[in-house]
Length: 325
Image (cartoon, rainbow, N blue to C red; front, side):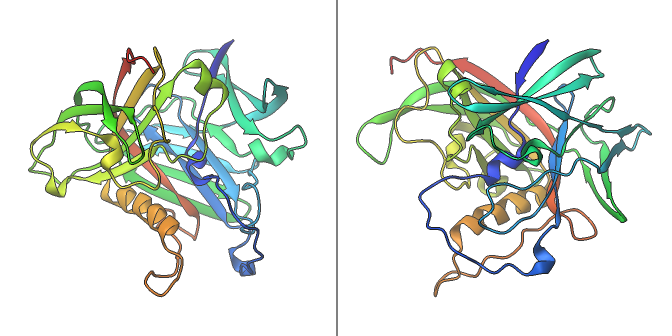
């Protein structure tokens, strides 16, 4: 059985920090609203989606919805009814985790999704519910995709065209001084930007090493967004952390010796860029004298569903850290 570590789109919403518990009255109409998250890319399938419901602001998680009907189709006539991924078991190795096993129809085998970061073995069953996986559809640049979710007597849908990919030409690591004393290992990349088009990019960056397989830091938002309005045609020595983001890298060294640095650059639509921009602003707005009050982000789903259906053309490069840190 092949083991995979999957970080779904939902993970970006769980930024942990020092907070004070507050009782905030959320209107009843905003409780139990459907949230749909996920993406199809031109990477190898399968592709994962999650359906959940909103809860009060002091809730620890959005409970998953397991009895939804999720359908993904393209403009070439492929219609894929997604498979619900069932929770199989809990495990423990320095932290509790949940095993989700599904039939990988693309390779005719059983695969396993590992959901880490559980606090203990008393987590409710619906914590890891609501995950759905594709069976046959494949992501292609320029194709149009429609995601439809039926739950009870409600139907939610979103359509998005996958952009064309812009390839990362090169990736390297270098030491860069940080805001505090010292420096950290930072990825830089070169790529060509087409000035004849409006391009929008979603960068993600992470490392792959033993420590990170066992202990992902969920306090860090590992994404940044960039519009190419002021970019030259040949972009040189671009640091993914220079895009719009909430926090960026952790303090200190980003990579340890022999860890693998991964930079993933996705070409996204303007509406997807706007969605992530909304999320970033939500973290900055507090309704104070000089900042607007927070508001609901712009979803591309019909019928009042929250979340976003993303189509992303992906370019990814990896490099091993050989700095001594």
